[in-house]
Image 1 (cartoon, rainbow, N blue to C red):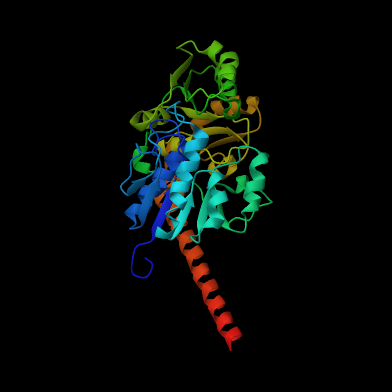
Image 2: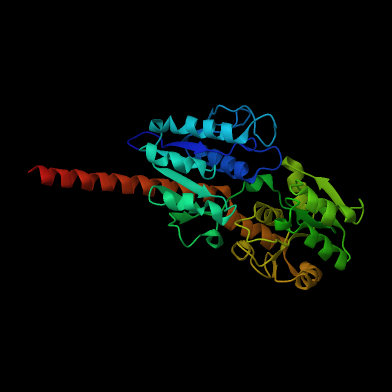
Length: 359
């Protein structure tokens, strides 16, 4: 509450996909989860997203569908219109929370409303100059300590949260290993195939094909529908069934992963994770308790052989304790309140100084 009324937040989502997404769309998924959790806590949230998005709050935005879902929508044009639409209404809100990457930063000095930006990972070092340019104006949130850049100031690190009810516990799992993510070198799809074949396990692969050339060279030749099976993009209840029905999730990434939603979703279902020790993985996985952190393909294969030593109930408990959506919402609310308190205190000091100078 602020002055006896609810906190008012403008939640700015990406418009690559619908919020929440029907299948792939991790930024939109997290934005939706946070939005609905804040609304449940009494916050008045206006979600700026595609017009086909869904929320219990107020929906706003000029673009009909996500540009990744409709090729007729020009991404640059509609992203600018989308962001401008939100900032033109800045005076209606106590906080603008940006989940839409760098473009909103350029609008931040044009308004008085405090701006929070969750950095959902850096696409490359080439975008760092814009973050540095607005470092003194925008409160940056890292999604893991591993993803912090030393040249930036951060207001907080807040891990993502998920709705545990969406990922029911499967105490048994299954016999097959699982790859769940983008078919892209970053996500280690080919490494998962190699590990499964070396350990003589079947592998289910789920995810969007993001790098067609990589898929054609490194993945497709091994998909036979039996030992290596590709099931495409899965969402909703099928997502939880796929994650929970696995023996283990193979997350043998080829980059420093900023977070990894599928990792915590798998653990919520009781499925342990075998991951390369890169990026945020050491923050998400308790080695020997909820999975294994490995440094090579041989170590991954060896870990597959030991996956039966992991208690699936411990995976579920760790996810509940550390990655529930209510914890994420509470962390963001605390940040919003701190920012607004600091602003009030700064304004009070400015008034005192002005009064002294006027004497």
